[in-house]
Structure formats: structure tokens, C-alpha cells
Image (tube, rainbow, N blue to C red):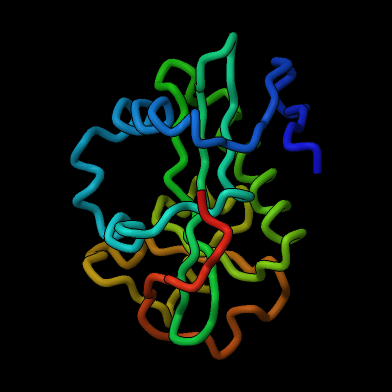
Length: 180
């Protein structure tokens, strides 16, 4: 993998790149802009606390050197079953609705599958995320501590049957070695 991919869906000549350590401050600034600092109080953030995102699944899009979009994946497990937590995904507010989010997710999910991952969880609106294959149905036997709106807990199989017989509480996965 070269680390950079053209984004044909956008026809805006932007590229998806792997995030690097020098990008961390700008990524955090974009996340604050998109979600506010209260984002840390959300249930999904408890699963990220003390764990770094996966370095080979942390992406950005730049425009004239400025980071305008970001997506990260984090290692989690459901009982003994490894999985990924997708998010946060953030797009500069004035650029939302132009396809950057969908392009980042398609790229990230394809890369995750290529790297051998088989199941992904996220918290979000099913109407939006079903565009890239997420559903509530796959996540009905899975729970997240502190996630009051269970209908927002969604799942996607990268390999057919990956969620068969998978149920339980989502936990941090401290064993992942491929973090930023």
C-alpha cells in the first residue's frame, strides 16, 4: 500500500492518506470543531481512553495542506472476539455532505478487510451508515457500557458470518500492537 489513495467519488482531486504522528494536533482540532469538547463524555470514548487508534487504519484528507477530514479505527473485543470500533469520523463543517465521510469509510473498511479484520462496530445513525453496510440487526446481541441509545449501536461484517454467535459487552482491546 502506498499510503495515499485518490478519492474518485468526490471528483475533487483530494487524496486519502494515512495519518501520522505530526497530524495528531490538527486531527484533535478538527474533532473539537466537529463534535465539541464534550465528545469525551460519550460512551464510545470510554473504549478509546488509554488506547491509541490503529496506525494502519487512521486516515486523513488534506486540502492545501490543511486536514479537512479524518477517520480512525480502534481495537476492541466482544468477549474473546476481536473487532474494530469505527470513529470518530469528522469532516470540516462547511465541507460536510460532499462525500468525504462515505469515501473515508469505504476506503477504511476495505483496508480493514485487507488487513484481516472481520467485524466493525460504531455508534451512529443507521440511515446514514447503512450506505456503507452497517445495520442495527447485526448488533442486537452486543452492548456498550454507557450507551443509552441502543438503536445507535451498529455493526458491519467484513467477512460473512463474522457476527454469528457473537454477543456480549464491548471491551477495550489492550493487546493490539499496531497503534499510533
